[in-house]
Length: 186
Image (tube, rainbow, N blue to C red; front, side, top):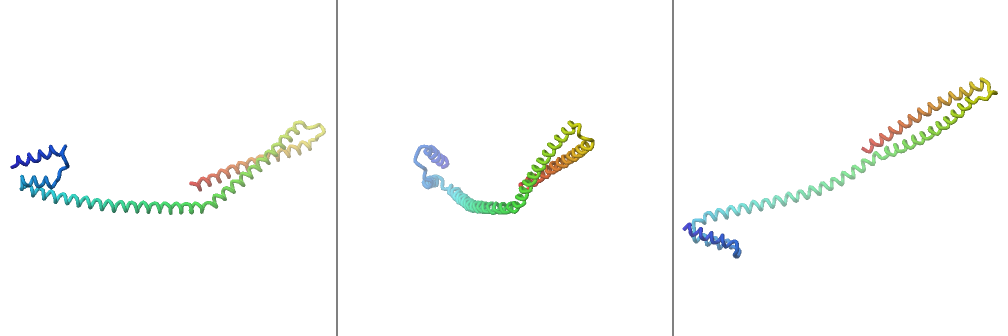
């Protein structure tokens, strides 16, 4: 009986590559005619196939639920990103007045430095003229005139030192204001 089953299966195997599609029910009937004892194995196969189909169905249901949750989470994430972006923008706007105050302070310090530099330039010109005059003192000038001119020169030199220090202080002040602006932007 077994050789006959092998012949049927061998024929089916040869026919499967080049013949019409195989009908499983027909094959089943044919095998059971030859080997009725194989029905138990086929029943077990059918039960296992049903179980596998059930597992596949459960997987598809789970996949659908998970994909739905993913879509909901993505939508929730997009809404949260939008809300957070709005909150960030509103929060950054709170620092804008301080940023504008720093801009104004920088502009004022730059203007003040420009004035000090101009004053320094004018004083420097006066010093040059006074030094030149001291070198080319006319014979009619007396010692009192020379002392007065030297005193004036000394005061102008002190004035340049004061103006130079003020410009240096303003440079540092401007630098610190710019550092504050950088810190506000971080």
